[in-house]
Length: 227
Image (tube, rainbow, N blue to C red; front, side, top):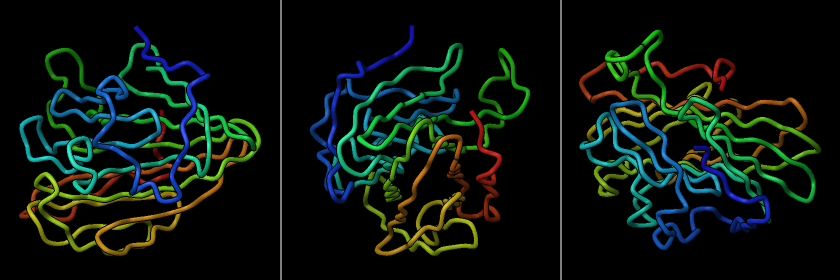
């Protein structure tokens, strides 16, 4: 059954999404992303507040569900917006439609499976990757992105450095590589961006995990992120 919020639901994004009251949200506010290895919880305002990698029982990379300082990844319009959500038919892809005073846009979120998996192979050889895609629908919408990786339930603040098309972490119990369709500013173990979308314009994002002893993981290029 599709998971949907009424279009009359209204949310106001704070001037800084890092200050939103993540720890006080009801569990019913969240949609589930999953890939048979792990799961993420996605709030209706576009914030991923829970994600353990690479498995369900691994320490959390995002634990904002429990502590607002324990990590999250928000992509949401600046200012006030209305929200409608659903799962794309037959999938675990969550589609969030934001409507603002200036336009509307969709946010699509999914945890990736390995190519060609079916039945009992589902979840095998998972790429440990979270994919996000923003698509303009009508008018223009200004978005704010804040990505705070906080491994070990928020106990670790990794060093974050910008790359040619995103950013990556150094130190800590794992490696995180982020590729983004817009430039990311990195400061205080946090990645930030602002961007605008219009009709038909898409901006893709990918976050990929690897253990510290592996070579740096290769996340999906932003222009290849698709629903």
